[in-house]
Length: 92
Length: 320
Ligand SMILES: Cc1ncc(COP(=O)(O)O)c(C=O)c1O
View 1 (spheres, chains in turn red, green):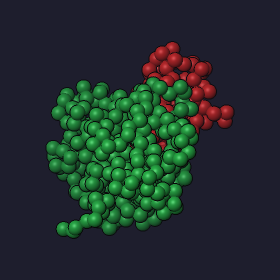
View 2 (cartoon, chains in turn orange, green):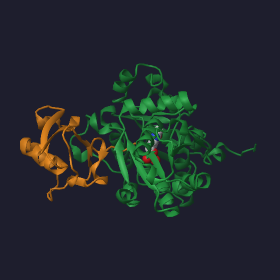
View 3 (cartoon, chains in turn orange, purple):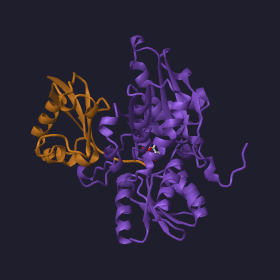
View 4 (spheres, chains in turn blue, orange):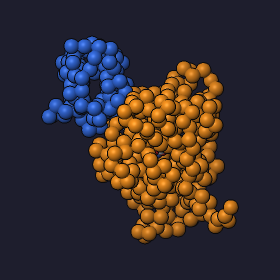
């Protein structure tokens, strides 16, 4: 188990007592997300769909890399890593 | 030189410049594709022309019609250059959180600007444009996020130009906005050589977007899914404002490339790729896109103010 920092976007902060970053333990991104929603149950429906996977319009990053292109929720985390959760935003 | 019948003849066939002096790895060349050389100074000239030509060919568009489009600036500016000569009236839904220059250029072209909430960012502009389009069915909604002509302009133009100038390309890096550049160029490059790796960079826009009611207001452009975005890309990363600024400044001062901020982000992405390549990977050639020049960001102090101060300011400005 490693302690990682989870950064939350403005839209999700109300569901995490107004915090912009939370420290959570886990050995994969999935474990970190599970632990996060255990501590802040209001976050759960925002982050995960019924099947327990990350919702389509949300991006989860490990050290700023989108986990969809790593090992998704199985991606290993180490002490001090940073997980960021952001709504997908388009440009143009 | 040639005598052109219209400015649109200047679109495309952009040059590539070797900026390997900035490469962190001596085995890796880095080439900048200067989309800033298009007539209105951005990659979006290609897309605007392709979308108009497609709508004209299908009969959807004819002189006298009103065109509506959401844009963080560049697509709107590109359409503005083309629309007046073709007899179309243009309305651009523009988020309030863009630089003053983007607004000024649109004004210079005489476009009607419909402002959308800065707090809702680009997603808010798309949503407002969709509503206005529903309310005004006689307006032509080009919708770059779902318009096949957008990625096709890159599949037929930008991609083949890159291969013609750098057939040895091993990696491609570009900013992700509508995904048109990455989908079109990416698809073409992988057909040319399936071993080419394609990487997206994006700003952390979703962090501060306050006007979103929930994460369901997140938005993935339809062309991204249609062109197999998840499978086409080999990686996607956030480049934060401080790093985008740093590399935009280095491109300007050390390579003479007058690069905008998404170009700085793409260069930062190229540098990360170069750092991770080993000797055993063999020589590599990374091509990245300079989507626009520095002109439209000067008012932010991007190129000379204290870097941390500007980085903080840019957290609330749309530059993709
Ligand atoms: C400056 C800049 N960089 C990058 C992009 C992203 O390009 P695309 O929409 O092809 O993904 C845009 C889109 O407007 C842009 O204006």
